[in-house]
Image (cartoon, rainbow, N blue to C red; front, side, top):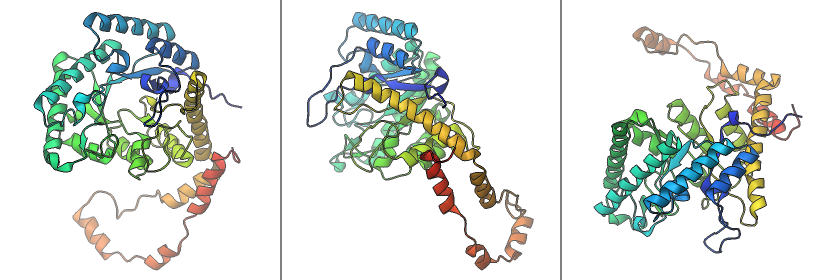
Length: 391
């Protein structure tokens, strides 16, 4: 029986806001006490996690003095060092305080936009102090309920202005940092700008320093839009823009649920791990595998750590299943038969000669159309590997 215990090589990380989630929801009060960040780090190290991520205010309270801030950060750095936990990613909370009720970078109030930039610069400084090299941007309040309040073109222009300002700040400070933009279609706003990974990938091409910026797709967010998360991640990988990833689970296009990774949508989770690990032959994703999820509201503190262990264990089980699936001779035979890997001289880069030859070629379209592709059997083989019926 293989071991599914995590190791630092797995690059599994959790946010302070994930293991520290107190079980509050819109209809009910907290069901478990808040965790001190240092205690979270100690426990994460104990269960084998590699990294811990944070919003600025997950660690340093919004109204902390400079002295309090330094004391908290010093203590947290010691806890990380003592427990062998790194900080790969940080982000800014631009959604919690009422000042951001109508957006941060896209707000109609220029003073709100200026404060959002100031807060983010301070957050970037904190991230660098903690050793993080990835900075995520989730625009939870960058949207509307009353869409007539601003031209959405202006909102996009303001987002671009903010990103250009902040990449320039990073360069001016001499920091080494990658930005990762996180999309979501709705919640907490009725409609959020740049709502899918595809939107973000295009937006990045319009930035002054596009080479510094990638995406941070999240399972639940793409599912909320009714989209294939695997396809979105594949597009980001193919573009060389998968800077970070948020792993969780979601029951269809509902509110954002942030469920334990693999606890729902097991087939999609399998295909995602297969893609990330490159078991089908594609290049493997080498960045952090971050679990942006939280334990059920039913759980006490012990249940939180059951949840965290479960995320990591499920990923490693799916990794093993993906390796077995792609090594299966039947699977390999079907994929080889259908992929037609032999280069067709009619394809490839355009030349006028090739185009003339292609135009003159006759195809047996009826014969081609009659050929069965065996995808039913391929999918059944995948299900059998998932269920442990094949090894």
